[in-house]
Length: 125
Image (cartoon, rainbow, N blue to C red; front, side, top):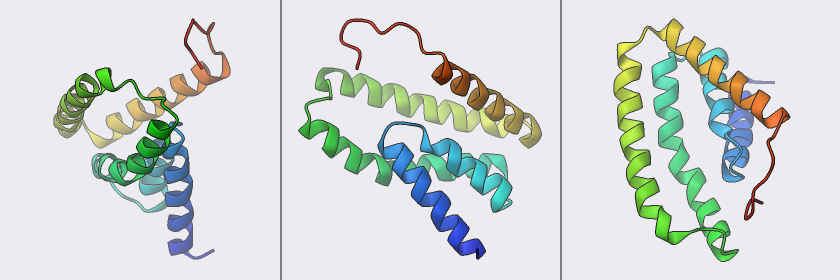
């Protein structure tokens, strides 16, 4: 398969997983660093930028199904923006190899948590 087609496939999978709330950014960052040879901080920046067009259709879909608690949206947006800015600042302080290892460890921990989910509380889907 041609490199452009691999990139398109990675983007499609990343967007689909992101729209479903399953962390498609992990797929995108892995593709950009390993497949496209992009530096880790740049790949994470691209991931943050591409999150917006993937999140908008999901927002409309979840809103129509009344799955969004609009009272919490403002706080979540503010906290997300602050976290993104803090993370971007911190990623520039770290060596790319260390940043790559931290990212890999976070993916591993999230994968293990998905394999062994805890008890669901009242109101959980």
